[in-house]
Amino acid sequence: MTPELGALVGAVVIFTFFAVQSPQFRSARGIANWLDPASTLGIMAVAVALLMIGGHFDLSAGVLTGTTALTVGIVAVEFEQHIWLAIAVALVVALAVGFLNGWLVTRTGLPSFIITLGTFLMLQGLNLGLTKFFTGTVTAGGIASASGYGGAEAVFASRISIGGAEVRIAVLWWVLFTAVAAWVLLRTRFGNWVFATGGDAVAARNVGVPARRTTITLFLTTATAAWFVGTTLAVRLTSVQANAGIGQELTYIVAAVIGGCLLTGGFGSAVGASLGALIFGMTQLGIVYLGWDADWFAFFLGSMLLLAVLANRLVRRYAEAAPR
Amino acid sequence: MTAGDGAPLLELRDVGKNFGTVIALDGISTTVRAGEVTCVLGDNGAGKSTLIKILAGVHRPDRGEMLLDGRPVSFGAPREALDAGIATVYQDLAMIPLMAIWRNFFLGSEPTRGWGPFRRFDAASARAETRRALAEMGIDIRDPDQPVGTLSGGERQSVAIARALHFGARVLILDEPTSALGVTQAGVVLRDITRARDRGVGVVLITHNPHHAHPVGDRFLILNRGRSLGSYAKGEVTREELTHLMAGGRELDQLTRQLERPAG
Image 1 (tube, helix red, strand yellow):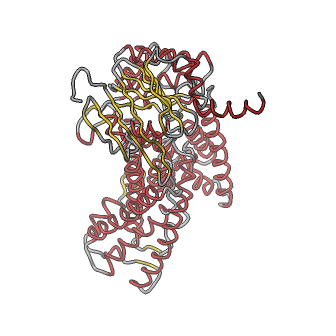
Image 2 (cartoon, chains in turn green, purple; image 1 turned 180 degrees about the horizontal axis):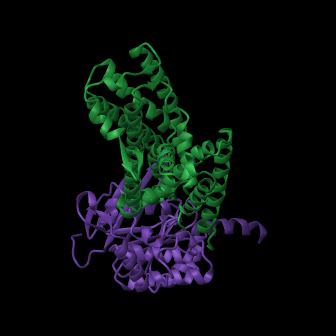
Image 3 (cartoon, helix red, strand yellow; image 1 turned 180 degrees about the vertical axis):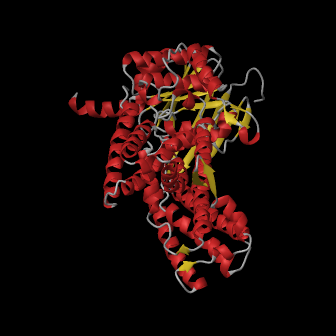
């Protein structure tokens, strides 16, 4: 009953498929290329997976990467502040949104799907409205000229030479985040509470698990991941569109589900979500390397998702169709 | 009454609880002594669930008092009742089907190792302790890593009881532990109850089955529509009388007479 087993098999199959046909795909440079989209997606997918295991969705996670990226740009450029201050302001904004999501979900008992859909739409409007208000355009740019940009670039957007290829630092952050998340989930009290809260919140509370606090912490975690990825985008691109991040929220969920997360909560894996993101990155670039039409990407992803959901259903049956 | 050897572990005096205008419980008194089984019997809607929730710290009573070791107590949360040694095994068992037995066993009370940010869930000792605690109760679990959902209803009850005892429960409240079980499995659970009793635990057995209550009970409290229909010690009441009281008692007698008169 390892949740990530399916994703692991899938990742190996997909890697083999593309690597056999495309020397470019299996070269060090090629690997660095497809690791890049996997990394920022992976950081988000891991946080979203923890939240899903805890029994909730965060549809505002995608647009929040845009919100934080825009905040960095606007505070650093329009308000002419040091970039680290801008990044700190963006963190406060992200945590406020995460807390609002968590607080509303735990206070009202309404499905997180609908509550975060509300915050998603609100942020979408705010991103456009405030960007226009402060910059007069729909882009927050000129971040490279902000004071302290060099330091932020080293942390969020530098490249490291590994085996002759330039690997983006986000890949290292992704590996680190995945390792920490897996450890927290499987080897700490909090991790046990996450599984329990997602499995049955009432039962968990009855044995003394602080289910509310666990849920709010998980929403703060997705918000923090969105802040990290948003900051990476802002520093890397130096110019952010007001619609950045929109639509990504479902991609995170797809990666988490391919990684073995049950939509109903209580089961899943951080490593699995990362493998889901890896499958995403490999397929996205593999299709390009093979010279196929990029339209096949969506079709392929959809079929992976269906396969994963069918496999996950068997898991749930195994655990719950027990003799009474 | 003062605290001392004579004081029961837990005592309820004229406890009552309202929900809005509905009187869920009124004038309930009973005692739970160490090494004894107090049975609470009642049909659906008799107030058994409300009584459990008061004992477990989920609800605060509106009237009357609750004494632990002879001293008045008031619980604001289930955690406080647990810390006072009152453990409740709910009908739904408060276990997570998708989680491993050992994870469930220590849920909410996970042992940790290490310090600061490296403080971690001591999985190795949790597994070993789970196996040992279950073995002590005579429960043979093949693999503590299997999900609780794969256990039978009786096995789940046994695990839940073993868990409560492992965490030092002095009072063990069991909510309808046999209601969903077949005859053999119910027997296993009743055996677990007597084992808990023999360890000196005060057991509160909530049930609507007098055939399960009578053989293990030392004291019987019969509830009907939130009120007590009577409190009996072992030997004061037969199984037939319990059944009769359960089935509505005096109300049923009256109804029977009313129905019989025109016919007779």
